[in-house]
Length: 454
Ligand SMILES: [Fe+2]
Ligand SMILES: [Fe+2]
Image 1: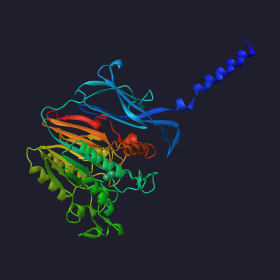
Image 2: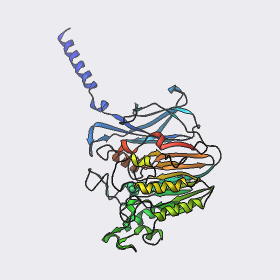
Image 3: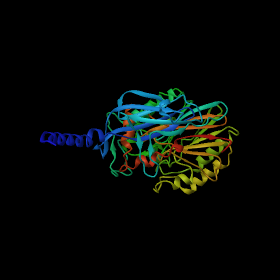
Image 4: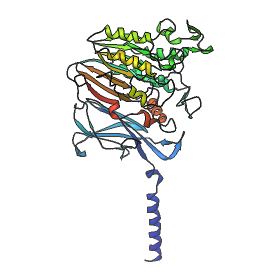
């Protein structure tokens, strides 16, 4: 080999090595793939394109806009797949596919810039495109109601992701563009688009039930044309202090003021309990926290209200809504934090009432901000479902389709552009653990529930 050839080979070797270690290419990561839901007629996927070698904001990988491509088909042969490409480019990819056949296997591939999306989450299997999904079975009979069920909107919050004040380091909310304004507004828009028969917001409506928070929340919810049914969460308790003095005092504890009951037209301090018929289904909402402390509580009065409401609608399928989870399984699968869950005596009281009525079909809760389906050995044949929060990762709500012979449930992500950015950002709350804790499994987020098999 001559000198010039050697020099040329050396240059080519360095060029090749340079290409192999090119940070622009090797640092493009298409990850955080979420199979958000699968339904009887489609599925929804979300993923994130980023540069993990460059980070910001507590170690988050830097977002990199890219294209959004989903390919799917009933055969494993990719040449037969349908391709869906969203216009434009984004780092926050979210695709909903509709019009598929129930109870049918599909191969599904998500990609950006030709790189197939993956997800690695501890405690769960790695998800790697293409994935195989099976659309849900559809219950027999007519669909008799559609409900949009949200919880934990936390309107007015200024810092997200703190367990106690200042710890762990939280995510500061932009006061000019707060996540809760975007997510609650989008919730109303999506409930309207879904033609829901009712919109339920199951507690932690606000950050601290200040008058301005209550006003903004209800001003947004008033945009839904159908019935809006709200529950009181621990954050919506009566408060003491100058911020709340314009609201009515609680008669038994006049230093506390109840801004929620003022807005609902109820006597100050009264429990927020309600019954509502939606077509052939009855919905019952009950308060599950102490008015002054916010600690989990099923008062004797509220238990009596629930008992009477269920007894008053015999033979009608009843859906029950309360902010706190309602099974031992839920309580024992969460962080032990005094006052956070229902106390054992109160939980036993609640379960006793539910077990006494055979028209109870399902119980929906929030509070943990996670997707979690549980069951009770003493309240047999009843679905217990915790729904992920609207306020933060995964940032969404539930759609419940009630059929004559069963339920089809799915969790749905709020898909406004700012909602998707906030959902990805808050995945990294609690030292990066949050996404692993609250997502649940696909079967926590989407399923068919047959009344006959229950
Ligand atoms: Fe909450
Ligand atoms: Fe809560």
